[in-house]
Amino acid sequence: MIDQLFFNQAAAVLAACRAKGLVIATAESCTGGLISAALTAVPGSSDVVERGFVTYSNEAKVEMLGVPPDLIERFGAVSEAVAVAMAEGALRRSRASLAIAVTGIAGPSGASTDKPVGLVHLAALTSSGGNLNVERQFGTVGREEIRKRSVTQALEMLRRLADDHAVRA
Image (tube, rainbow, N blue to C red; front, side):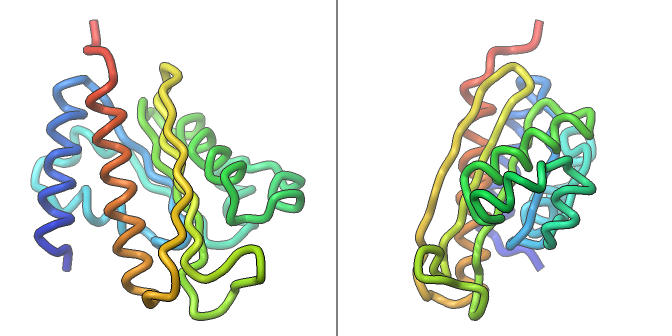
């Protein structure tokens, strides 16, 4: 069930996108579809949400979004470069004009010294060239909390890009 905070944030994102004629695609790893779930919990979201990709494994990132395998090998799946490539792939492989991507380590395992639990990279792109990249280090606040904070951050980024986007002619 989507909580009220997500619902309100998602409704605001959808309204902003609707006003600007933007359509959304999501590319999610550590959130496992929660961003799409938050957006589609709002009645009438189908005119704004085009599709969602849940690419939990590296293979899915490559196969579904076209993330170059050497990018994952060079920077790791949890990196700004991979988050950006995921968002680019979501735009290329959909009819969307706005994409959000998230990749991170929700824990409790999977961390390393340089990539601790709670590290999350997000990228939001528009087909007209707008972009936002954010790195968050949420810390060891628990898997569910890391995922919730990631969704909140993603919705905030979508709203910001939608608000900044020029009105469709």
